[in-house]
Length: 433
Ligand code: NAD
Image (cartoon, rainbow, N blue to C red; front, side):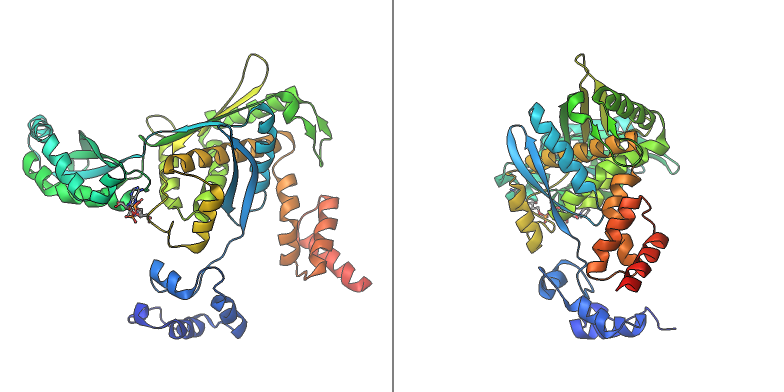
C-alpha cells in the first residue's frame, strides 16, 4: 500500500506533487489533464491561497436573477453544485417584485473575540479589576490594527462572563470589535491575543485560549418579503395541477409549523436556507464554514434549535416571510481579493459594504427557503429538484453528448428520474441509432 506520509510535500513543485498523487491514487493521464486545467485560477494563485495544492476544484457559477432589495436591483452570484437552488431563489425573487421586493437590514459589523482565563479565585473582584481598566484595554487592542481604525472599525466594548465548566469556573472576556468591511477573524484574533496577558494579570489567573467566536449575535442580517396568495398560486406538474393561492399559503404554513416544532425538520429547513447563503459565500470568496457554524448555533441560541426563517399570514391573507441570522462576511480579507472569480462575483453582486452583502445573502436565503417550501408543501421536493437533476442522472447512467438531453427529457416526462430507468432509456436510444 502506498503511504500518505510524504516528506515536505509543500516544498515540492506542482509536477512533482502531481506525480506523487498519481502514484498514490493510480490516476490516469486523463485525470492528470483534468487537474492541470486551472481555469480562472492559475497554480501560483491557488498555491498562495492554500498548502499542498495539486489543482483547483471547480463549481458552476450561476446567477440568481430578479432580486429587488430595498429598491435596488441585484444579480446574485452563486457557486454551488446542487441544481434548483438558483431556480428556487430566482422564482421567488421574481414573484416578490410585484409586491416591492425584499426589505432588508443588517447590524453594524460587530464581532466577538473571546479570552479564556483559568484559576480565577474571586470572579467579582476579577471582573471589577478588568472593567476598571476597560478604556486602556480597548486602546491597546485598537493599536493592533491601525488599518481597521482608518476604515471606521475598532474595538467598541468589553464584557466579562462567568462560565461554569467540568474543569471549574472560567472567566471569559468578550471583546466587541467593529470590523468594518472585513469578516474580521484575523483582526479580532490579533486583538484578543494582544490583551490576553494583561486580562489574565488583572483577573489573577492564567489565560488559555484567545480567538474569535463565530456566534456573531451582534452582526445579524434580517430580510422580509410579502407575497399575495395570487402570486404563489400556479400549476405544478406531477401529482397536482393548478393549486390556488390561499391553499398554497395554508400548505406552506403547515410545513413551516413542523420546522418550528421539530428539530429534525428545522435542520433540513435551515439547510435549505444555507443552500443559497453558502452558494453566495463560495462565489464571493467568503468563509462559509464560519457562516454555517454561526447560523446553526444562532438557531439554538437561548432556545431549542429552530428555523432561521419565520412565516405568517397577515390580515389581507398574504404570506409574510422573514429571516434573521448572523452573517459575518467581508469585502476585504480572506479569499475575497485573492480569488479572481470571487473578485468578479463581487462586482456582479454590486455591493458597497459588508453590511450590504449580508443583506443580499439574507434575501437569497429567504427566497430559496420559500421557493423550496412552496415545492415541498404542494408536491414534494423531488419533482422540481429531480427534473433539474435529470441530466446528472443521465450522465451517471452513461449518457454522452446529445444522449444526455434525450435521456433526461424522457425520464423527466415519465416522472421516473432514476438511474435504472435512465439506463433502460439510454439502451433504447442506442439500439435505435
Ligand atoms: P484579513 O486579516 O485578511 O483582512 C482584514 C484586515 O484588512 C483588517 O484587519 C484591516 O487591517 C484590513 N482592511 C483593509 N481595508 C479594510 C476595510 N475596509 N474594512 C476592514 N478592514 C480593512 O481578514 P479578516 O477579515 O480579519 O479574517 C478573515 C479570514 O480569517 C478568513 O479567511 C477566515 O477564513 C479566517 N479565519 C477564520 C476563523 C474563524 O472564523 N473562526 C479563524 C481564523 C481565521
